[in-house]
Length: 145
Picture 1 (cartoon, rainbow, N blue to C red):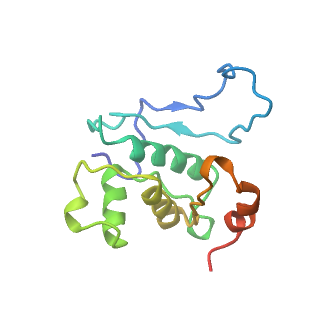
Picture 2: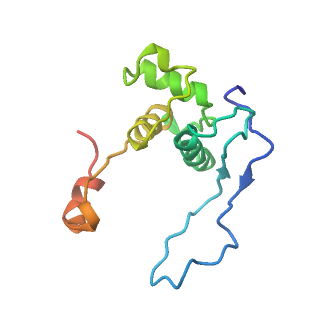
């Protein structure tokens, strides 16, 4: 696996730019700032079938890195797959055998890692089919206690 500071050459920047809107949206929200699109195998690791959560997290991290996010305003490198796994073990979220495995991660683990690596706290707010979403807004925007 590549080191934490290595950026794979196969990464594409800002892949959303220039794409047509799907259908005719009544409202759209776009990313402000640049990011790199991390994809299966981009760093030489064959992560087909288990790497989607990691690659989505790495893409988010690349945007945060470009925005200068990190502890004390010091930008952090995008973590490698192994660094993500080791962080989850260090946090006590996963057992030691998780590091170096092909086990997938989900949204909860991605949120833990965004906080761990970049100091960006995350919340998951349940809102079935968008019902009650307006009432959830204060909880989603409040700082962790």
